[in-house]
Length: 632
Image 1: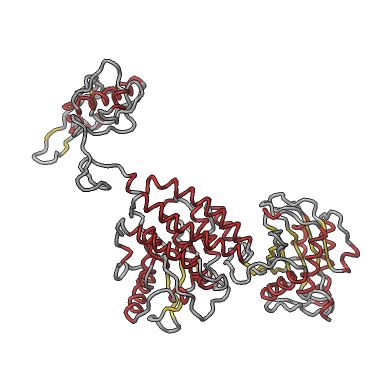
Image 2: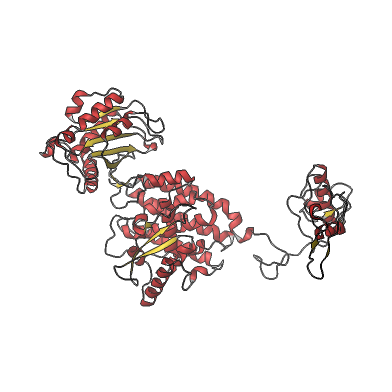
């Protein structure tokens, strides 16, 4: 079943029943046959190649070379044999005559035998019309296996000449599309489990992966951009709001206009802000995800002449890097009461999905897109770097991208857009119960999508969603302490979160007492911030009684500074506290220890000893000679 490979090239996938290994090829073209063969027979970039040998090839080459381990000389002999038609007929091929296809297994899928790899390679090349079975002259080819990759993937490399033995060229027209059809035929021929023919995810290139590794990023730029764009699009009610939200998230946005027009936008591109000295890498909406193309996004927004005019104005402002024309809903702060309302909307969506047939792919894709956007907004809210919530959003987004969107509309579903909107407002707080209710409803909606894939035997999606949502649940549970109103510190006089008439009252004698910084401790190691409570009295040294609030605080600070002086740490500024708790302005350490406020005031009015005697104008008044003082 075709799917996008990690390199971004069109690829095919084959699976064995019950979730057995899947083969993912990556097709490239070049012109250096000898260089490619020497690399395949060599140690590899990370010394990962082990025992390179042939597992398949055309009959002429396999008659001269067996499955012994390859060395440099053998690799050059094979390269010369593959290049023989090119050298004899001098045929030129645009882009190079070397066909290179790597077939790889995911690391978690295990390994295949040489016989299995050989059968796959022979059938693949036969159906791709490299052999004489199609009535044409054959082309030379071999399949090399050299162990696992540095990421643990079992794989083989197919190397072929695109020039046949009679000097004619192999027809590469729509070869990538043809490889998709070959995969389907092989799945049926061998009775293999066919992968999902309805959905497909956009891949990424090796250059993107190398950039993410070089910069220490947890994911490629394409995935982070897709998550942000999907979140902004779902949280928006019209096109103009989408543009403003995307810019608010720090994305660079530029429109694609119709030919010769500046008032008709047909597409868009986005990019992350580049680092210093680098150029921005732009991605079109359709290259980020099949559900993120502008026409597909517009089908979910309200469309009126006024909204179209406002959208063009915002696109033009983004293209010229100007301020938003008319800031709107994205600048408002939603109230805490909306959390429960939008959680109920997600619940209604889940209830509707229970009666939606699995064959209604458009409806399920819409639900997956909105749920993925909500998880993406939650990731932005609580994850400093993409983590479990971002992974859950990506897994759900795979269910939101269809290969083809039918013209008919999907069944009417309740919307979960409000959940994305309120989660995207980072400062919006909720009650702890509403916070938990929101995630419970989103997790159950993801579970419904998981059950849909399970019912349709899409085991890959089942495994991915199950693991991602479980990890996301733990991340949200850990964040509840800082993301809910119930966990916020209460200030004296505040009535947030309390019922009318039930304001908290301070115990007698503690009306204006302030807690101390966390770095201050009692001499016995207890915390200074405890008030006059049972816990505080239990930790108070025996034989002491609490004094006035200010005296207690000053004594603690004075003791802290005294310990700092004994340990060799200097106190900052002139303010200090004596052991009896009274405030003083004398330094306790350093060369000016013991000197008071007047001394330091004089120091500020004088110049350094190197310029003593010169005039320095004070803040106001007539100039006067600088005063010197004895260094002590």
